[in-house]
Amino acid sequence: MAVAGCTKCIKYMLFFFNFIFWLAGGVILGMALWLRHDSQTSKLLILQFDGQQAPSTFYISVYILIAVGAVMMLVGFLGCYGAIQESQCLLGTFFFFLVILFACEVAAALWGFMNKDTISKELINFYDAAYIKAVDVSDPTSKDSATKVLDVFHTALDCCGKGNDTALFKHVAASLCPGKTLQNPSQSCHTKLTWLFSEKLYLIGLAALAVAVIMVFEMIFTMVLCCGIRNSPGVY
Image (cartoon, rainbow, N blue to C red; front, side, top):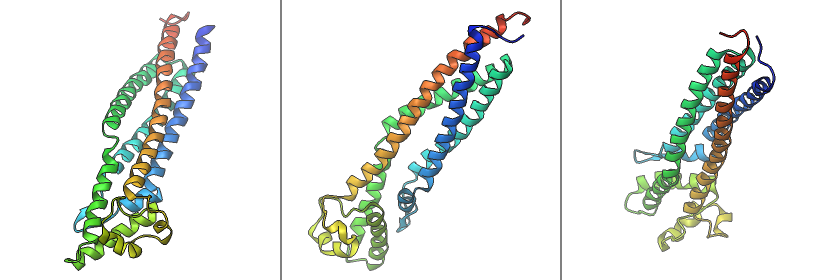
């Protein structure tokens, strides 16, 4: 027999929150795909010179987000269907996956907070390695490949140099930096790299916080609905 009264209200509230959760999974999946194919980051993270590849930490994080978004959509659908069908089995399975997702999200948030500067630092170190090679006149082969790497950084980020550039770099800056950047020497690539990934991580953090709040409400509503179904007349 179908649930009634306040429990019926909880049922539809749970369906609504699960629908929002399903949509949030789609948003996270879409955001992850956007981060993966964003022109600025993709141009920088495919670079390599002298056998060195740009750091892949950011892409690893993005692939995790893609997996999380897909799983959220699946779990959200399971929760919607379980709520409408008033199935304790489906709701129990949904609650189990929800707890696992919540634990993974908390662990990922802690890891991200502890390593929030790692991605930008890795790319800054990669930029600095190319920077050193670009001003090295003793090795023309490495100089050419490093110059191409710097050119991608400068064009993609509209930046130039490290902010505390040597006289030698300033001498060759005209050939390495976009002309309009030379009129604004304060825009260092170190600053731009830090800003670029901090902004993206900030967006991810806001999305994760919103999803965590939804998950807490869903866990509460799921437990209440399961108890209501178990105590409904005709359910033994």
